[in-house]
Image (cartoon, rainbow, N blue to C red; front, side, top):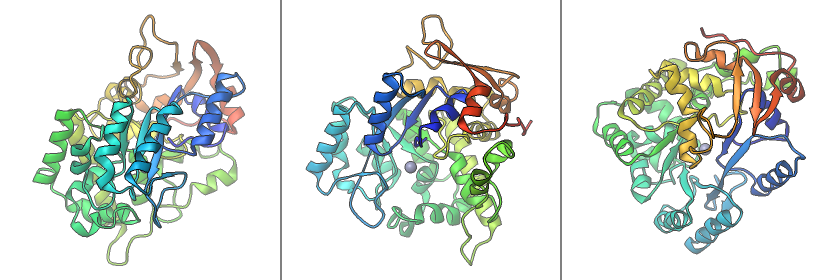
Length: 368
Ligand SMILES: [Zn+2]
C-alpha cells in the first residue's frame, strides 16, 4: 500500500499487518516516518519502501522523482539506495529506452525493480529489460491489448483499455501464454492489487466496493461516504456488464498465473483496509486459504529478502504475529477478527488499535 498519514500505522496494526511494502510515496515523508518509528515516537509496521521514478509529462505520477535524462534516472536510483529504499518503482511516463541502464544500476545496488509499464512497451519488454515484478493485474493483461492502448497506457487508457478489451482476451492465446510462462520460469512476481480494479469495474456509480462492506458503521461518516463513489463511468458504447466481464477475466488471469506458479504478493493500492478482501478474491481465484495467507506473509517476505527473519511462525524468527478469533485456514474472512497483535515482540490490543485509528468497532467477517 501507499502509506498514508500517521494513523495508517495504527489501522494496519489493528488488522494484524506488521509489515508493509510501500511502492512509492513522498520520499521525504517515508524517511521522516522511519526516523520517528526508530526513535520510538511513532507506532508503525515495518515499511519496505520503493522510490518512485517517472518521466516528465502531463501524466507524471504524484510524488514521483522525475528523470529527464538517462543519467538523471541513474542518479535517482543511486539516491534511493543512499536513502535505504529497498526497491525502485518505474511509472508510465518513464522513457522506456532508459530502462536497461537504470535497471542494471538498481540491480548492481541490490534494489528490487518493479512498476507500471512505461508507455509504448508491453510487460514482456519490461521483463526482458530486467523487471523483477509487475505491479497491478492490468499490466499483465496489457500483453494482450491492442496497440492503441499500449500507445496511451500512461493515462486513463490503462484502466479503460483493459475494461474494454480484457473480456475478449483468450487466456489460452499466445500473448497470455507467453507472459505467464515467462513469469513462472523467471520467477517474476505480480502484486495484482485486485481490489483496486474490482472497485473500478464492478460497483455502479454511488455504490461501495465489496472491500469496504465489512467496515460499514465502524468508520467516521465522512470516510464511509468517501467509499461510496462507485466505479468508473462506463464509456457510452459499453455497459457495466462489459466492465464486469472484463473484471471476471482478470480474476481468471490471476488464477492462470497462480496455477502456472507465478509468485503472487498481496497488495491493495488503496487505504489498506482492503487487504483481507484482496485475499478473499485470491480464494475466489482458486488459491487455498493457506496459499492466500502465504501471498500476504512468506511470499512477500522472500521478495524483500527477509524470509529468514519474518513471514512465517518459526523459532528464532521475529515475533510479528496476529492472534485471530476464528480459523482463517478454513475461512479467510476470519482474518478480520484480530484480537491481539505482536510487533517486534510487543503485545498490542487490536481493539485499542482500532479505536485509536478511528474505528468505532470491529469489522464483520462476512463472505463466509
Ligand atoms: Zn501503481
